Image 1 (cartoon, helix red, strand yellow):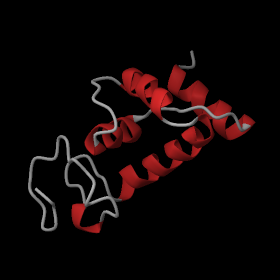
Image 2 (cartoon, one colour):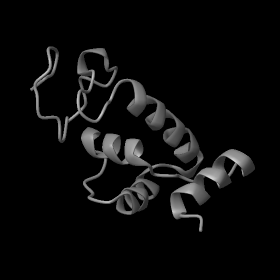
Image 3 (cartoon, one colour):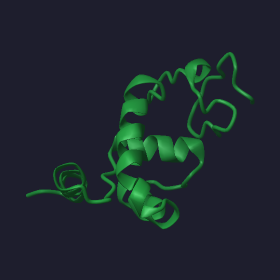
Image 4 (cartoon, helix red, strand yellow):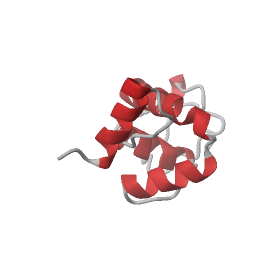
Length: 102
């Protein structure tokens, strides 16, 4: 069957609906930035839907996926290249990076 994430992505991309498909990137970045404090993608979706205006959900998903694939990597995030460096809480980032505020 089709899971919630896949259904939300199809609704957003194919039908223009303002839905949020929370994948590993969206989940990781939302927690790393400190937007949410969740353990599961389903919890992340629920919390983000509460704090993000509906008109931005689709764009948030696309932006966080691309950002998670290029800059905010799971194991070796490129903090020095990150435009959010000054506001990121770096939840789960184990190694210090050159320009981190910590």
